[in-house]
Amino acid sequence: MILIILNCVTLAMADPLNENSTLTAIEMVFSVAFTIELLSKITAMGYYTDPNAYMRDSWNVMDFVIVTGGWFAEISGGGGGLTALRAMRVLRPLRTIKGIPELKRIIESMVSGRERSEKQTWRAANEASGKN
View 1: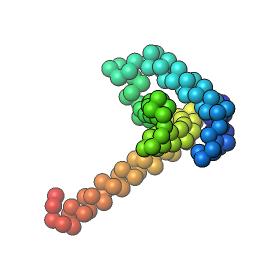
View 2: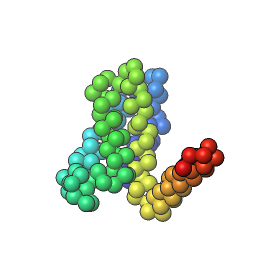
View 3: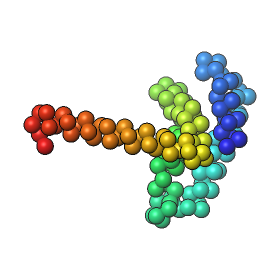
View 4: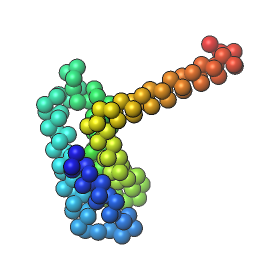
């Protein structure tokens, strides 16, 4: 949790128009630390086949996408269309949600409520157009 908070501070200090080599190096340290955490979890939990595997939890899938997307952008140079991948770093603070059960429950409720609302909207639209 402390690592995520420190990462938030460095992200707030970063100026996308003005490259700072110190902040870039610090960002690389965070990327390595998050990658070690990801690999440790996959080693301990299994990747996918076990019922409690790493990739069977949606929060871990989000974490995996953020970490691997960050590395893809870093390896590719982060220029051009890959700027969006570098911007995924700002999603890292979402990882803190998993550590706070009450907040995680609220976010999951919001997402499931939105999904239910979308299904009801589609159902109503289909009924109105005569499709069932």
